[in-house]
Image (cartoon, rainbow, N blue to C red):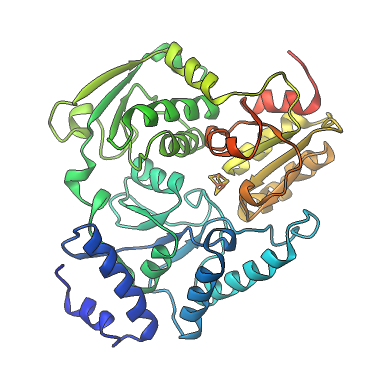
Length: 407
Ligand code: F3S
């Protein structure tokens, strides 16, 4: 792999021991993926921010970097942690995990990370623009950066992201390269299907496309220009778990895909699939194993809810009470929660019996129930080993189930 003089200096330890370790990890990674050089990145989103994912060995490495005096070279935002920093005791999260998460948070912040603690950093905290090379972890965020913003990022693994923030570089391979961003498989949507689509429907659409495209790059025609950020967030989260899709070309939405020809770099797509209501209904059924309408847990906010979603939820819950035998949990970022507190939405949700949790991911919330309803296709798919029955419903449907309105 070609290394610039600065890369060599970093690798030789001329910029400190921490940068030397980080650079040697990235060079090895680049060699594994046949990268021919390193790339400068503008910012990093660190997925290795939860003690629950990186465990003791990861914590030890981050603390070692910190003790070596490392400071991040580029802006770095943080994915969810393993705890809600304000409410972990109330939520009965483990004090052993909390103690280690607090140490990890302390080290990351001392190195210069912005404590966003969110998997939707593109909504709160990250400054990312079209055409930038960035280095992001967390599959929905990677998808959003590539698909919606038109920035370029590969899918970073835990701790490779920390190394990248230390040196401001990442090996040049995968989705950074023009030739790997060419659309390969065309999905055409019938217009009438989209008129009533909400975020959950976009999740189902994403899951279907991901499961067909697998590792290929899908091109999707028929998405309306007024699609919302929350709908795109849901699409990007689901397409990444349906397949391993880190970039979709949504014609007219993705900045580098105004048309199908543009998305396919002038070539013809290898395959064309028309999506109608049947495929989406079958996908919804595949993802829903819940029998009946009475889940014990209702969990919203995977990826983290925006202020708009929190305020809409508050409107739906206003004047209603969550049933005693149901636990309604909403996950969001600290930034969105702070704004939603100002707007009175959190008070309304919590007066109804819901709980708004910040900084963390549902994976770390202790749930007692074994049956779940969620508006998140990603959560429905990933949580099937944690819950015995899982149901998908949009926000309205989840609220109806929470307060006991049966259909
Ligand atoms: Fe976010 Fe956790 Fe879902 S990190 S996208 S809430 S699985």
